Structure formats: C-alpha cells, structure tokens
Image 1 (cartoon, rainbow, N blue to C red):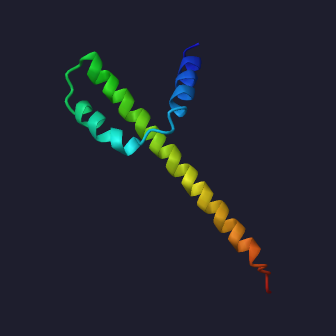
Image 2: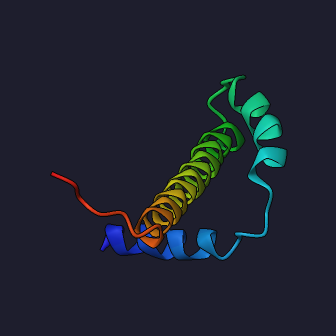
Image 3: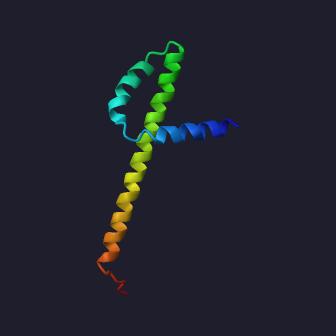
Length: 83
C-alpha cells in the first residue's frame, strides 16, 4: 500500500536527526525556487518540505517540553486554591 511506503520513508528521515535542518534549507530552497520541471527540481521540492516537516516536529517537541516544565514548576510550589 502507498501509505506504507510513506511511513517507511518517514522512519528513514527520522533516523537523520543529526542533520542540521537550518544548514540545508537555503541550498534546497534556492534550487526549489527555479522551477524547470526536471526530476532534480521535483526532488528539491519534496526535500524542502521534508526538512520543514522536521523543523515543525522539533518546534512542537520543544513546546511540549516547555509545557511540561511549567506544569512541573507550578505544581512543585505547593499552590493551593483559596476561595
């Protein structure tokens, strides 16, 4: 099934976590912004959005970590409800 292929691709991409997305984006974006319909251009479009997907994932993970830190900090102060 085609969706399985995409999940396999996602698994492979997630193994590349050591790459610095910000370093790669300018080069890929420059290629993507010159559409010529070639296979290389099509690949650059896909790679650009994969890299942006990794950025979004990382940002969401950081936001969740901050929420958890705030939650832990607030509960560790022994706050109580006063009516």
